[in-house]
Image (cartoon, rainbow, N blue to C red; front, side):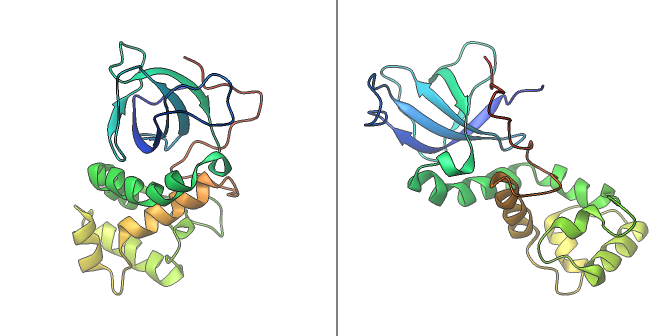
Length: 189
């Protein structure tokens, strides 16, 4: 399984959790590639701020001591839940080219369902318009997408809403997020 290389801080607990015996600085992160929710320990003396990008790959890390575990949406602190949409939007903007390409390449899941219809706000009418428009010319940006599709909702918000739904683990299909881990599966490193 491919791991996240970078995560963004959605909460920082400098004194750790009050409920734990050994208190150590913790951070909750959302991965930049698969939107994996992780809890990590922060090295002594290091600090981090909300939205900060941290390296969590296999090489030497500056701020992160170790990845404690993969967490689920319900494990997020109140602060992390509040920060998550803004941090996810920032990641979407940073990866705009990839997400626009998804609009250019997305295909059917089944005879009745298209990948783009999994985005809240994309129904049959928008789907038909997107498919016809991308045949003429591939989309180049979110702005291009919105200008060519009548009454197209903000693509960043559509994607962010879908990612939030997938993170909550109730989805039948996953476009952006790695499906929830089984409880026995570890996020090892």
